[in-house]
Length: 537
Image 1 (cartoon, rainbow, N blue to C red):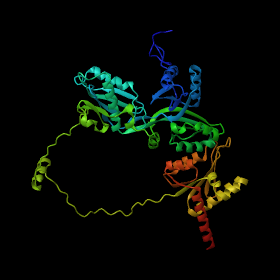
Image 2 (cartoon, rainbow, N blue to C red):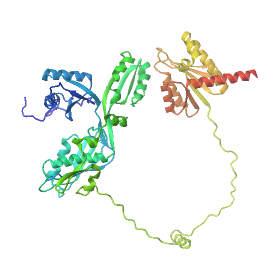
Image 3 (cartoon, rainbow, N blue to C red):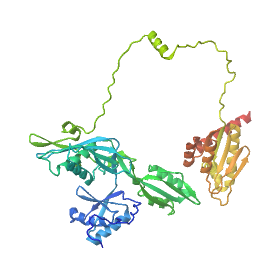
């Protein structure tokens, strides 16, 4: 056993022991701790801090006389409540679930804080600069020691590090920012220990009020594994959540979807996934980090945080006049501050111009002296014969790719026929498309899924004047259509006929035109009507 260690914590590596692996998941949800009626939050908090020291993934927050806790979900909630009941005999509950948001800034600003009640004095100027995502908070000083004593500078840096500084959008902690001490001022007689603390906090807050703030929310890297026939539902859900994803990966009867999604949208998706996949779906989440919130306006309106009404994080400063202190609003502080701005504005260089008047003759003399005699070209009639032919770009031939089964089950008469005889419905579709292709003089290929048939090598055949394709095992019609459209898109005027969302999305990415099965049906019927008129004549 080792004694005398006061700054260690659970999970910390000492000596030659390699550092432990970071936690894959970080709590992104906060809950309010509801105590029994007779319990005092101020007395319960030190007890809960003991659990926080024992479990590094447990984070307690003290806000406005209430205890809040960060944790992942229902399992951790039950474990936490059980531990508190066993150790301290308290039967508490958790409520007010919400996402743990953070804030940063987009632009560089100077924050000024002044604290001068009677017989107190401190003024601090801070430079707030945005940093790349994941940088956290960085503190520095560029203040000359002949302007502010080095001990006061260290004190200001200590005050910057000791507090969780709140943003001005929802009151979330700030991150990804560099805060630099520019200048500061103390009084020989009146400056006391806590004066620079007040001035520093107010300078940070005043700078945040000026800056363009950005609300950050946690994003997860997700991996969804489910039966292939359910992957379309998952893509629709992720897109509705505002997520991003790569193309699905198929492996036998299962498909995998990977991407990024806001934690606020996917927090309860595990139950939904299990429901529509009959328990066959699996979801894995890993914290990706914090990124700009996808619905900032809605979150800010819902939380309703007023930065000017937060007494613990005020942006205003206190000045002294006629023996009494008075408060100055944050947007007027620079009119009262005692030090000049620490940001040195760059002055534009002074450009001196002189007007010199020269006539054309003088200019010509200068040009001849510098570059020699001026030779002006003599223009005449050209003897070159005019081109006989002008290349005219011919229009590209039309090419239509049809998602066979999608069309069959969308056209009512073919869908009814497919219930009794699917082969007959396929032949009927091919017959109609063959007549349509012959009348409109376009090239047409119809693609049918064959990926579920074991050992199926795939098949390509001709049906009169159109091409019929059955995909091989493991290859969907969607994938074949996407590859074909990408291959021939430059040489033909390609249109893809399908109402499947994935097919339409892939065709859009290949730069070809899309049309729904309803539009194809209208064109086929219109062609058949024209053919009947032609034959009657």
